Image (tube, rainbow, N blue to C red):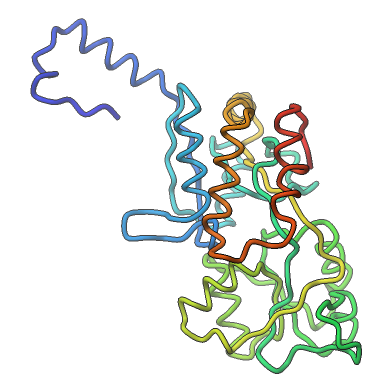
Length: 293
């Protein structure tokens, strides 16, 4: 929206009409979000985190588009996209069931391998002493109640393992608007025994609560590096927006800034190999115009 100063109000009607037409020409991209650190975190002046910083970068480079972020529970977000409402979702993992109602940008988010989070002192090792645990083995044991989030993908491999155990008594799928806080609350209160998350997400949430020593984590044997995308409603509008997003991030300077945004929010927790994986999985496909997965 253009705010008019006192001087601008004295302009001729023709010039004012030109300003109004220019304002109307800008398409607005709505980015719904929920609290999911470090991607999105509610702040006093609006959302903070990785995604708002990347959206600001897109705003600088997507001529003819304006960007608005609005809080929206995940269930409503995906339901709105299914209905064909014009919106874009930041950073989500591509899954087969979403292909019908979402169109994806090239990869713009690199997700390091996830971890299993346990209460302190309750992490199993199955006699191996390894720092890495198999999710399938943990669930097969029947001793650990996994809390999984509706609408949240952990990547194809982990999603398949959880789906295979979907009818087991030790897998609980639940929905909350605030993913990280809900999972931690349930873990620390003893309502679940383990959940899947990222190390930066866990560290931010635990620092906020001031109880860093109350949990521990294990790397997941079946885990791998994943890619996140901007996903827009699968309409002609969404296809145009995705093309504009791809174009905005298709040069080396934009990709340098994109990577620096992610690293700046990791607070010293940059995983080993992040730069090389970013280059091979995001920068190279983006520069080559490949779609990625």
